[in-house]
Amino acid sequence: MLKVAIIGAGAISSAHAAGYLQFTDRCKIVAVCDTYPEKAQNLAEKFKLDAQIVSDYKELLHQEIDLVSICTPPYVHAEIATSFLNAGSHVLIEKPMAASLKECDDINEAARNSGKLVSVVAQNRFTNPMMKLKAVLDSGLAGKILHAQVDSYWWRGHCYYDLWWRGTWEKEGGGPTLNHAVHHIDALLWMQGRPSQVQAFMSNVAHDNAEIEDLSIAMLRYPDGALGQVTSSVVHHGEEQQLIFQGLNARISAPWKLAASVSRSNGFPEPNAELETAIQQYYERVPELVHQGHAGQIDNVLSAIETGADLLIDGISGRATLELIMSIYKSASTGQCVELPLQPDDPFYTREGVLKHATYFYEKKQHVENFKELDITLGRNLEERNEQHG
Image 1 (tube, rainbow, N blue to C red):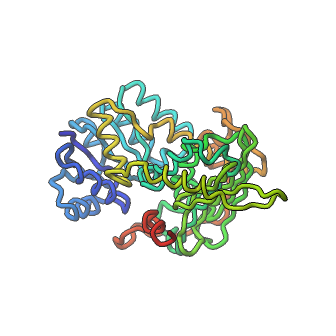
Image 2: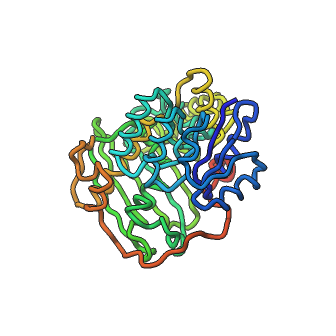
Image 3: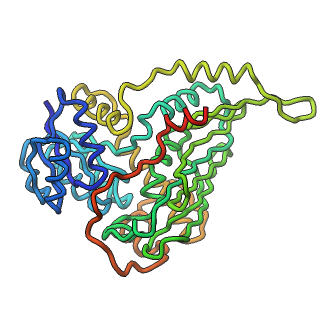
């Protein structure tokens, strides 16, 4: 029975708690920590946890904790993760992995030295539409990928950035590019690999209480000549997200949509019904996941600890996602076309460098300590949207 601690009892911690409680024969939540202990107590009561409540994570470093979920603001991820790794615990870090590439490297070094595991939350991979899309891409049926498109569309009201740690480069680390599109950027890298060049723009068009962007658009060039684009937003009503791949033979996406064309004698398209049928049948044969979302990733982490099975998302993967995000910020802040990979001497490698060189849109002049406890939105469920749109 693995002993689990949850560090940070904000809104996303409920997804972790609910995930662990699907595996009560394999793990037990023994501690909840938050600098506001009443929030930790509320989480414990909500999920009927028999757990120790603490206000300082350091109280847990000398206890027998097998796995730690880190659900705090990004600027303290590295400090907490390295502390628990060095103390002998595995860690599951809520996105983003850390506030800088330097901090990601520190976490991964601590993992190597301790022999413990690091996984970074990217729960969208653990959904049937994403897993099936990945399988179809890997099959090669769609052909060489020519264009990839990420639409990470979210909507957040003006008061969203009133929370004390949000809306600042220092504490939140960035806007929707870092904190919302991170899941789709992770999936894009998983499916398509790393681009070689990034050109980006960003703006703050609706939240004058935040230093950071609320909208960014990035153009990507891949080594084989393929192009991509990523839109990251908290100003899009409807909160619809999609990941589209245009292959030489067919177009496929999550939510699932399929189209394949062949050329007429004059170069105009007509449907390739035979290929569409073959791809659809392949998609439907991909096995359904037993657990999805956070529960699916927690299952993967527990299995890796218990049996040595591979982590689907490790610290190297988490770092790669942050590298692409930092490349977008660098390009949007400097106007440069950024070459990947970013090097350790790059200004956007460290948190100090980001704070110095990133574009500041507005000054955050006031804040609130906490919001009333409300459920958070995680976007429209991919399965639901798939059903709605066929």
